[in-house]
Image 1 (tube, rainbow, N blue to C red):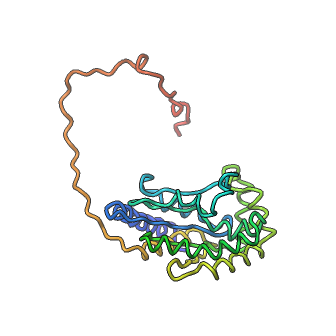
Image 2 (cartoon, one colour):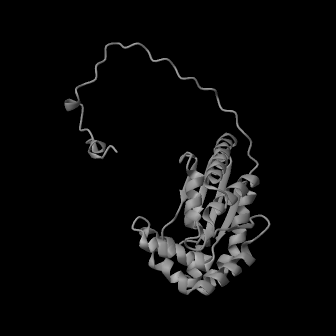
Image 3 (spheres, helix red, strand yellow):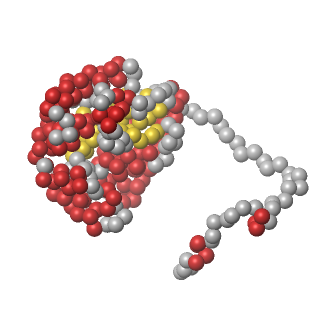
Length: 264
């Protein structure tokens, strides 16, 4: 991987291009979906964080759905995802998506074999409908080796600030590595279709994976640099005699925590 300063410069350049994408999506009323899938600790979350860092949450939002409720379990499988699809002028990043059925649900037995087969049949149809309606759909699979995943899990276990990223389900995936691999291979056979192909991101090196994925996404979008209206900062008008109320009557102020910190 390139030096840190090279990484930082390229990351910033790509993020600047993503801001252009945002303005194009707003101006042209485009709809964009980016699906992030892959094994636990493969680097999806970190990439999503860098993509959205300078974007407006009113335009680019993250859909990270929890486990389905009892009511949702009684719906058509794709139904709860449909309400999170983008409207005109929106980008939606799915931090895991409807492909849960092809992965964790299949491996952990949360769906029946018949439900899994039905998903593999219906998913390409569902995605073709999205694309035919004009939605720009991009699907990325983050691929991490078993050794690197193990290292990242261990790092999370030892870091209290990231311990929340681990769940019993994540740790269970270690013992079912080959089952997840078979499920992924079967998923790819059925859902890697010309209208909505899969793009695999090698993610053993996180920084490299982020840059590669972001650069590729930009290369697939037909965006242009939208000219924005020129803004000018107005002059402040002269005072008309307003005086700020004393602090003691103006409300409750946050204590100055910083004053208690060492200065050197």
